Length: 66
Image 1: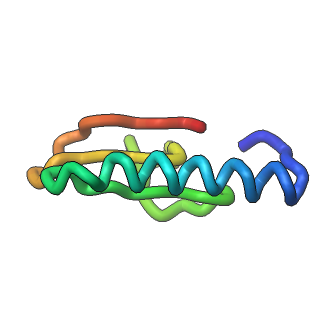
Image 2: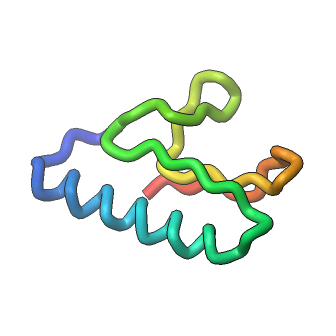
Image 3: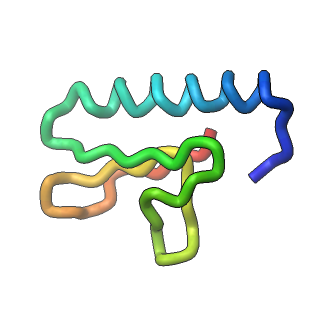
């Protein structure tokens, strides 16, 4: 994760949440976020992108790094 000021991190996290909100509009998507360097949902066990979208069968749809 890039080093950011608190202000920049807050802005980054808002963009992450805005993207996740957009993806959640499609009810067939399951959306996970990893804001502020958190490790809520991994891809390939070691990568924690900002936004991960899967379908209801847990198949990967989108990975976003903001």
